[in-house]
Length: 417
Ligand code: AMP
Ligand code: GLY
Image (cartoon, rainbow, N blue to C red; front, side, top):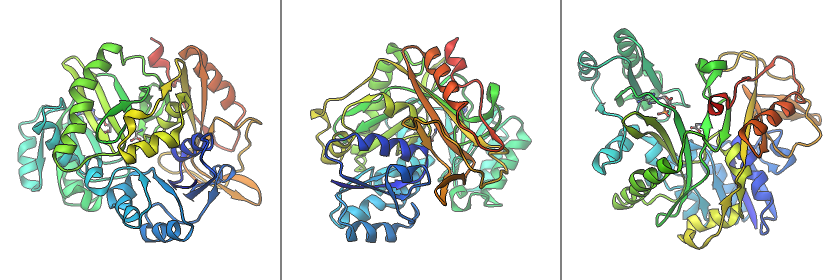
């Protein structure tokens, strides 16, 4: 089969490496891919948001199956457009991708179907939002309704910060139309868990749990980033919690989407927080997480293409797959200054074995990999224990070199306690 994978980050690289192991896969295009991905697939210079160009390419090349990995094209309806041309896809259609595309939608869905989440109110009117803030406990969480490159969530530690956040979103339009509506939400405390799942709308099968590290610096200090590292499984996610989540969160969410006429097919991502008052949903994503995918897929024992196609066809219950009873750790290596300002164009040197190096931001120039993004790559290793996985990852990280590189030294440390 001839596949196209949409996107060009570390997540897409991990998906492509796993797809290459599948027996029926003959050829993979990546749109747009990146320098590292070009060693595993044929990269085509079409961006993930250039929907018409993607469809034209898929038709012309007679692509058999398209994997839509990033949020934007899902929320914009790429799956609907491709399926309209008879090309099956992995990922939800536009009606279902709204579960990530609108936080107001997802919060209202959880309220309507009794799925545990933080208390909240939705506002379309700035004056009403500001008035509501007067009665809120601090800290309080302000969220732009729409996609905002992962930057649309502000945890306000003072009333003044909360007021400024609302004004920044609703009056200054910092996130464009994504901030026309805001969600104001109760601040929760507790360890966070990411659970990615496969679903075909009939069954939902959780993958191994994971833990993201979103802040730039050790000790969870510094600015929020796209993710500086991950471990799987997440040690806070016990069997008891997993059973509760299956019963009260995963199945009810799948059923709720179906009841709303928005059957979700693809990877449904549950961002959870384990609070003293139980597990709550912090967010849904309509796709694989990045860099969660870089620890989850290396532990998958099964044919990823078979699984993906089964989510599209509604036959997921017939596919056998499991996850290795081992631990994985991914350490992200970034460019100095990320996530604010950083330089590009430095040559990257790699260890000989690149099988578990997932490249997020390089370009191939004259046969050399040079940095082209803030997060440059992730190094994943697997071990029999979490400690072993962490140690192996940091050993391999030492073999990656480029000017001004940096990485967190404490990925997974909280999970060791
Ligand atoms: P989101 O994009 O909704 O996942 O939010 C990004 C991050 O903000 C989450 O991973 C949490 O660390 C944090 N966050 C979001 N909502 C809350 C909340 N209600 N209480 C505490 N932290 C939150
Ligand atoms: N790692 C968080 C996300 O993919 O949204």
